[in-house]
Length: 360
Length: 219
Image (cartoon, rainbow over all chains, first blue to last red; front, top):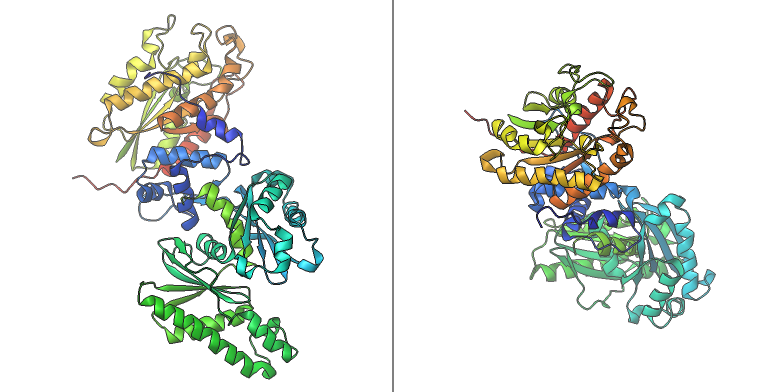
């Protein structure tokens, strides 16, 4: 068998493009995951980090280049040692759509392979016909913003769904009683794979994949939405504990308070409107206390250095909060989530990438 | 210093398109020469191009010594230690006298890889890095070579895919020369000076992309 014809399997895969749910080798996923974590690394560094031989890395990178998932940079010369050619994920290589279901609106976000938001729309439930078909139509609106050539490069759709206990009436009507039905419905309508995950876990995953936590293996994650939720990430694994647990110190509580003064969340900028000063400080304190209590109690069991706070709140508000927290616990880095536009929807959009391209 | 062996046919030898086998571009114009100046003094580029060289066939007309397989072993052994071996062959296998499909030319290349692995002329008796370069396709008009290369242009266009399949399955580096240059119209299957330059520069990039750990200086 030594000189038997080679098996053309890998090449045949390429011809089928992105749409076929290709079974990727572990090594290919490993290389893609590595490129996500550290954009601009060379083939030599990939070899060093994975233990793969130069020739194996070469075969994998070439195949990923041909699929336009990976692109080559300019050779870096003039440093110590031989010149290196940096590799990065090609932002145009794949796209993905995520949908999240908030208090009053459903968010649709389309992201590229580098995690950049290319399209975002918030749809009031009152403006949607309550059926999975309405969601599929809104997803399609997003897909149609892509140039025709890129539409074949959509990896799939992710849905970030709240836990049953928190699922309001309209979300239920929108998705139907049975999530599996909704999934099948959208898959049939759009011809793309649909992945579903708990919304907070999805937001944490998105931050881990594309955001501020991309190089962090261990951190505590807070999602400051209508309510305050948390997840613990250890060794890149997201742990949810009692996942329906949330605290009523979120933005909804603040919004209710502000409303009484005729103000909205967006009024909180670099300056706090005088009328809301006291109210804002009280809310901030309550929110900080809750976060600090969680961090402190957890530090008794696990040693982590970073806390990520993800929110769609005005940046000034979230930054303020991080500063306050850091003053209380100077040993911990409090990082603001990078996905500020619809963090849950972006997290949902990262689900197809996880399943199709990454090492689990 | 690292060394690279450039094992090929007339297009590595630097034969000038439309001229005889004795007409050869100078060292700096031939692609191994370009490669040398691109890679700089930390690399030693060894030229091993022979007009009419095949992958694994004794040529009944041009002679048994055109068989690349017979010469690769002594050649690689003479030039040890080798960090990298570049093989750019295949065009001559497409002569009608050998009657071989493109896929079998790729298998010929596969044999050379097996032989190199067995010989292991790399540092410390290891297998060197190996790179297969698919030659650019033969043009449809090959002038007076028409009868010798009957059917070859069509088959030559399949070489890159067949070579890449072979490279993938054996896990070696691959480069498609057609991505940076093409054959000259003077005879339809030789590279002109411009093509040599483009190929040498591109291969230097490919070699750098492999990634080479900094070498410790030997006393």
